[in-house]
Length: 483
Image (cartoon, rainbow, N blue to C red; front, side, top):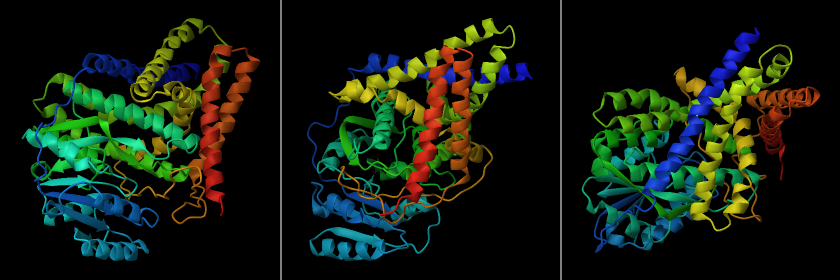
């Protein structure tokens, strides 16, 4: 039995080690290409027909904000079409109808599009809008975004290259300092945008449209097969199909699109579940096409890492479960050499730290204050292992589920609150109970490590405990919160 535990733990750490070391690879490419600049068209004339799509589903609190901000974008009205793709089932629809009528009277070419169904969810709504869109270019914003006024002038200039099919901007965080929860999210997203997206784009690897805050060439979407709803990450799916067809993407690190981060943990869990499961579904669908394509091996390998990195979550969970019996195994037999060898896996932790450190130093003057949150962020990632592992298994087993959108509450600063508003979840799911049990279990691991004086094991035991405890207790607290 001891050997089974040891082998299982070794396999888990090996997987985590491989993905952790990928952080060093990203840092290598970051330094190699850091001086490479994206070059826009010098003499850009805003004469292209553009359609802006706003996919909505029950966005009571933010729908006015997004429509008003889009109408403030600096671009000729006669070249701009706005589609409000409204699948709502609540009073959001009435708010949209009144606001659209007002904007029409102000001279905007704006349309309130109702399908009467949620078939295909966001992908279905975007595809329906595409069918009747007038624009040569399609910009997309989710309801939690506030696009900058120069968005179109900044992004359209890159389409002077006929091979460019999509331009993605970096997400900025409206409420990044609102709470520990949003601070951790901001750190995670900065790593993705500042390092992953930037490095992959500059190095010639495949990147992805992030679902919002970007603009497509309409012919690129059509050439790639249009939006498809067979995965929960329709943006990732279409991105790969387009790039496999030879289209080039541009990522703009220096130009941002501000957005609201989920401030309620159960909303964040739904978002993370959808992103994780959708990425696994997309990997199953797309990776065979990637490996059969004629793209270079370096691109195939990076695409594989990109599409499969969520596989780490079941192994994080397995490592958490095996950590406790390993304390007893180590003190009951001659396994010192084995455990000494496994200590090299701390390099994976270092790789992750360097990844996020570089992202903060790149864009923030107060990066020292931000990177201090890294241990809390790592603990939180561990705490999400139950939620995200379920998503991985559902994706691998082809279990279909509906697109559960992330509710927005117009929380922009410390004076705002989501408590008492619609769309908050009042359910305490089974996964929350499992997370609470894991917190108690990992606390036993802490006591065991202290008892056997396994001091080296304590940091990770503590992080697992803090992660599961924070996620489970915060989930319960937020579910029971009342105005």
